[in-house]
Image (cartoon, rainbow, N blue to C red; front, side, top):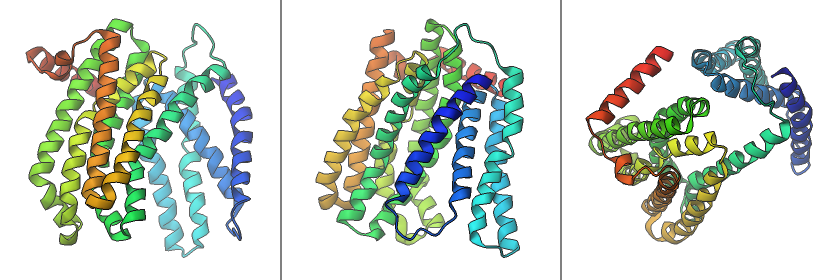
Length: 350
């Protein structure tokens, strides 16, 4: 880990600095301090590497602790700056401290728990794997944000704000379910054999699908009340886009389990190959539907692209594992027992 960290630092930090300063060539009259921004960028790099290392070592107690400590330190720093009435430019140092202070603790955990692999990974292997994942994230980000961009172009900032409420509520569910499950599932899949990978992915998919269905039903029943009480009556028109987006999330959120499955098998290219289709569909439908149907058209476009991504990933998983589609979506008493065991195992692990 020490050697890999050193090589990654030597390779990545100069690359980041090059693109960083290149970007500022296109910005006129930029008066903010550059030095703390560079420190923050490097701190973010190490924070990401260390957190992913904790996940890889299945150190979820330490990982969850860091997820709490980082924003807590940052928030504390911001409050001190506001209380002392300091220059707001110091806020960036609050973020720096939030990322830097937990690093020694994470480093000690990783060094003490590190397991020597049978084959030492080379930096080239890591880059060859990670750029495929990063390309998928770029496409996924485009798919999630393109509708808002087109709404802003064809409609108005008011519609952007209303639609953003529907998106924000859907993202809350995806963060609680999709991100949480992926955080646990990927390391588990990496350390297990092929047959167990398939069973774990299937079980976690059913768990995710069940939770997504509960979210959809809850949104249908309480969504309008929630929007009116939290955001105000003027935002109640966000309810229809919220329902449409929740329908799309019903398939795409559980499909995150398939993402983890293909990553664990060293096939991350399957993610971006699928995203290419769903992003193209999203872009075309947004351009066609938003000028005519407004934010409802945006929700329809995104929901359809979500469904396409989810269905394609399910088909790829089915073809790779020979697990039938019905076996993926149908629940029985054994599945309920498996889900119960998964929850109990995770509680014991945490």
